[in-house]
Amino acid sequence: MTDRVAEARAPEDWRPSAVQRERDEWRRRRTLRSAVIAAGSTLLLLGAIGGAVVSSPGWERVQETYFDWDKAVSSFPAVLEGLWLNIRVMIVCWILILVLSLTVAIVRTLRGPVAFPLRLLGTAYVDVFRGLPLLLVIFLLGFGGPALGLSGVPTSSLFWGCSALVLSYSAYVAEVFRAGIESVHPSQRLAGRSLGLSYSQTLRHVVLPQAWRRVIPPLMNDLVSLQKDSGLIAVLGVTDAIRAAQIETALDFNYTPYVVAGVLFCCLTIPMARLTDRYARKKGYHGAGGHL
Amino acid sequence: MSASQDVGSELLRLDGVRKSFGDHVVLRDVGLTIEPGQCVVLIGASGSGKSTLLRCVNLLEVVDDGMITFEGRDITDPQVDGDEVRSRMGMVFQAYNLFPHLDVIGNVTLALRLVHGVQAAEARSRGLEMLDRVGLSDKANARPDDLSGGQQQRVAIARALVANPRLMLLDEVTSALDPELVGEVLDLLTELKGEGVTMLLNTHEMGFARDVADQVCFLHDGRIHEQGSPEQVIGDPQQERTRAFLSRIRA
Image (tube, rainbow over all chains, first blue to last red):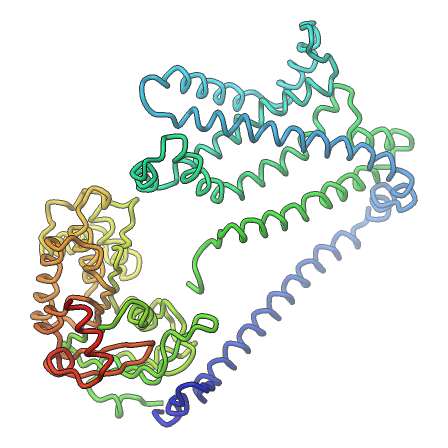
């Protein structure tokens, strides 16, 4: 045993010893075996599900109604145009949501009696808007807002629909931010203040960067969810992807446009998820450490 | 492969251990043996590889080459169950690494209950006994954040020791402590040595190494340059590098 190890003794031009080569070989084989088993079982499962669907008695009718290629091609431009609205709504709302929710979260974590009314306001806002169903908020603001006839405020359904989305989502996202802020160990705040940084400087340069890194995954959840819920403003008469698909469907009761819309939504979400992963890794978020 | 003949009574044996992180070789060709009941002290400058060596023994790092034999078994074999090996060692870290969400007794009894299958009531009484031994029985329900550094480190030692490990690994356990708190931790380690606990530790406390160690190893640049009794290595170092290190640390 000692002889096999002795090979490793050459100091600078090190080459793996026989034992190490055996270990590497064993690890390589095990990795390969695991990969083959994982791939095989996945294929088997997908094959079984696919087989069950395709061999079902009603498959032909379902295929006609949901997966009609010609219908998909003909409805594509209308659905895509609707999706463009979803994208614009999503981007504008997301920026506003981040600003509003971060403000609410910071207000809710303020200490001291002076901030009590602000904290109360923040808590009340979160309680109310997390409690109300989104659709209800959209109806309320979408039809009630324009009726107020406020001067200088647009009366378009799009504007009021987006306001409803922002108000409702900010309540959820504020809680995500608050959890992130409170998860940063108090010693970090102490260290920041000890350097002479003010409360807000500590928050901005020490606490928030660490909190931000931790809440990226749940924020991503809410962003994807927003992307889909942005379609709810269709109830106010705006034409988004789902609404466009519905109009196309109404022509001949072929549901393929819905599938087209679904595929397009996925095409938006999946690259976004990969980008977020990369961004999080760059920011040094590795999850659990090493091989343990 | 029957390793028991050529390891004799050794508890731990390192042979040609090598570890690198990327291009940076942290340990090269490290060899070391520890008999049961011995206290082996690693000395050397920061970055000489002392901590990495302890982490490799605890299988917290995967070695790039060489062999570590613990209780006659090659634990660097990838087929070995690392959790099982670690359950027979105790590790104490420089920064204590206590679980802040658990109270002191919760920290001490976690592994007893989850890993060693001890019933909650018995785990609690064993934990309290261990806390008594480190002089902290009145802190059982305190949170780690409410304790002083020396107290936290003693909790960490109790947590590592409670399951009767065959080997204790102590990674610069006094480096984060006030000088006045260093004493309480070192006294505890001296006591443990007296009780026959086998220890592998690295420290900058030369007085402790001289009084307690059976064997001192000087690491430089990932290599053991000199090893032997404390009288030899600290009292009468043969190597130029060892002398330079010792005079720097005494200055």
